[in-house]
Image 1 (cartoon, rainbow, N blue to C red):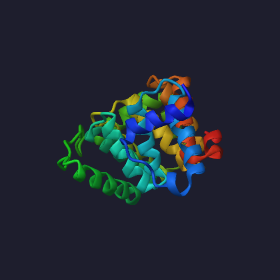
Image 2: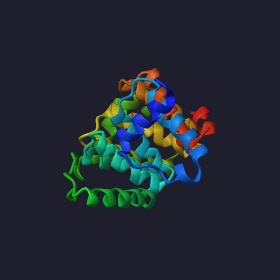
Image 3: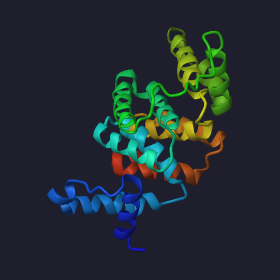
Amino acid sequence: MDRIVKSKEKFKQLFGSGVPATYFTDPDFQNILSRFIFGEVFYQGKLDDKLRELITIVFLTTTQTLPQLKAHVSASLNVSLTPVEIKEAIYQCAPYIGFPKTLNAINEVHQVFNTQNIALPIESQKTVNEDNRYQKGLATQVEIFGDLLAKMREGTSVNQKHIQDYLSAFCFGDFYTCGELDLKTRGLLTLCIITALGGAEGQVKAHVQGNKNVGNDKETLIIAITHCLPYIGFPRTLNA
């Protein structure tokens, strides 16, 4: 099938029958964009559209590309992602990009949900409490990183031990243990978040190993990073 035809079909599936304003103001650029993202990249590999939209949501959140984020939240609902899955993907960004940027993204999600009459707050996916969030987070880290985790903690300076404890309790306890998204999905989303950040290649390498440990193979990782390419460019994609 012609790439232009494929791109139009994919665009309609994701966004409905609307036409971007840039088709009228910058038609050459919009045609290049549509062919590449929706006619080529979206058909590369075997990731389904739901996972592709989750990936898109997290790196638009990471790069704070908020107008496009709003559009892709709507697209995510169109490909049958649930409001809970969308929210959990956004929440997953917080340990890596910080609370202010995550709250910016949450505000965009709420605007879309309001237009779709989706009630807030969504159902809680929390599985930990103040007494066990550290231990459950640490156990999740071990499941993902194995022996690498013990080596990392042993090599941490005394005056930075508290940061490792925060990592276990906050990042892996408060977020990774939540329901709706499994470890394979969360691991893949995290790899995409860190890739989008740029300058975190050491963490990319660690999370590649972590993804392998939870069942994401090399092809899946390469296709996921390929899906980031139109949104973050070649340098960061090739670094990852």
